[in-house]
Length: 341
Image (cartoon, rainbow, N blue to C red):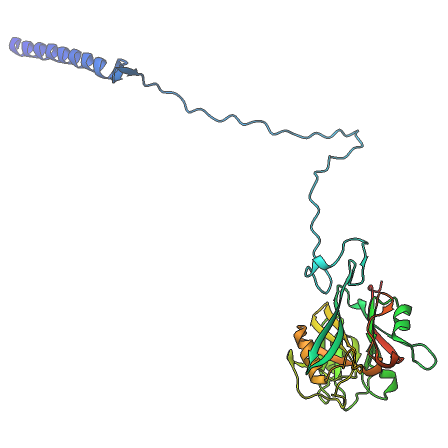
């Protein structure tokens, strides 16, 4: 028994000594704060909490219930207006802004109408030819109008009709009152719907497009469905798919004074008058040469109007061309003016 007790006491003492040594080791290696050095610069590790961002308070707008003033409006840029009219934003440089109007011997410019007048000479088969071109740009189809003489005999000078209607530029029309047939639409009004069997037709629509139709190929229902603004029946048609023609529906193909309408795109047109029957000045043009002229001007459609002694162009309240034999009165004109209100 005594030996067994001694063994137990020795074991207890050994355990106490071992535990003391273990606690001493733990204190020096784990619990006691230490300094870790690197390159002789002491670095102390600390448990520092991660800083949090400080949010600025959102300002609150308070409204005085007794105040009669509303909140201060925030200025905004006015929207840019979208271009309107037949040409949209095209050829904007040709028009003026506001109420400004420029009227010279060579051009007319306003916010709705632009016209450029040019005079030309050329040789055709060694013959002198003199002609005038009015290059026309309009934003409103109502600027492209026709007028009919209201004299008792329905005959007036082109210049007198131009002045009476405040025309900027005007030419002879298609002499329609002195024919028993031929489609006639003037400023949106149907004046006659009986087709002439030997005449081509030219139609200007309200959307600004222009089309020409050969005799025998004219569909009135189709034309009416597209909202026509003007329709002329004199002719002939001068271009086919934008190309010059060789065969024409006319009995007057030889050298003569000429008047024609040309079309480029909606809102862009030209009026052309060729002086003729004056050997010392201008012979005029044959029909195939007139077709070539309209093609050279860049037109995609072109149509011949009443020529001969009737062919005249007025501009700036004066006769611009030089009609043969002093000219002849007509029953109607084609003209450009400021748009209808």
